[in-house]
Amino acid sequence: MCERCLELEEEIIQLKEALGFAHDKEVPKFGLTTTQWRIFRILQDHPNGVHKARLHPLTVANPKTDSVDRDASLKVIVCHMRKQLVHYGYEIQPIRGFGYVLVDRNKEAA
Image (cartoon, rainbow, N blue to C red; front, side):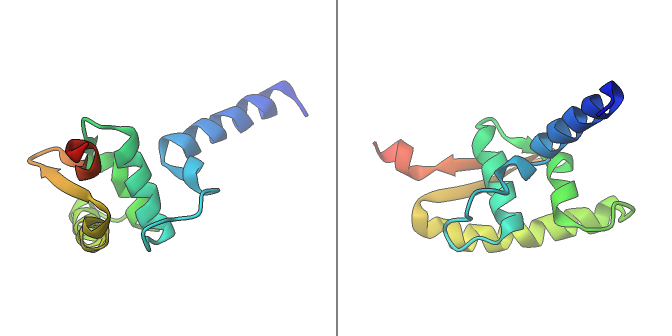
């Protein structure tokens, strides 16, 4: 393989990791879908919160979808996730004007 091809392969790996696809090999837990699991793991990896723009690519298949539709899709997904995760001690809280943060109530209790 040429040197440029190797560079591009590495860039693809980095982009997948940045978008949360690095967690695709994991089996989703808590009854979450694959998309919900990616969002959960990204939130889990960033304890200070994640900007909603970082989560948008995970919520819609069409990259040309406008930001209003992306926000609505993300809100619906997060709403469903909240209902499932509360039973396991997790809470997804909004950060006004920014995004979301995952709170692990299990760690707080310890």
